Length: 324
Image (cartoon, rainbow, N blue to C red):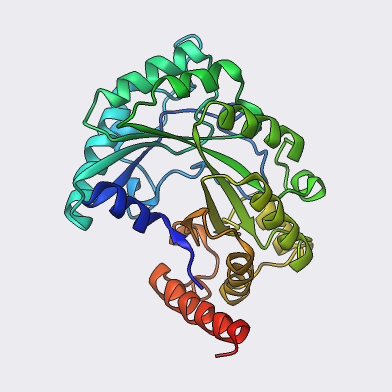
């Protein structure tokens, strides 16, 4: 049983090591109450999904890249052109050194990267794209933070030799769960945003979280069935991480919810990939957080360990169904 991995897709597309340069452009999120403080999604930490490699070992950021109030009308609360350029330079240097990267894809990763007026977004995207030579623009955002004007803007960057991707956070198709985890949007909101992107032929990746409170195999199957019906270009699968200090962590400590183990995430992933349309790219299988954000490090698997176990289980599943 084979799934289409994103790494294999990039290797085939570019014929050279291609990597994303993840940046934090100082955006906030419409689901947070006070800029970048307070909570909407109960599992979200203060970094808002910022790439782990952009942080220092103790979880802090270099002085030039720390959040500071922007103060410019209409701009994200923490936007700094200097910080973005610094992150790009540092990220590219790291990816060259660690992975031998030759092709770079600009990835607006942290928080909701369409959370500003379209004219402001254009200035931010243009400035970042001008900082280095990039082969793609990738923008991660929320369904309730996208409209026709912003979708048109994203589409305007697409060329025959330059792809544009939008990553939409869905997590689950079940409104009951979305409400429980404080997502601040419904599945209908997601469908509206997804349609805006597909109408403009913008490549779309959907974020999913396995192991959300109250969800089991039935809910997982229903989510994957909807993904198959929609046929996005890709999915990102995340194991539920519950960082120390988040509202969900408080729920966990009070015994109101349970945390899935990596073994349970492995079973969920095998089940989902066995059901997922094989034409849909799989960009991610697990996620990680800083060690300082985890109360118990012993249950966390390295990505290589997880992938090896996953491939073994998928092979066993394929043999079971084929009768080999």
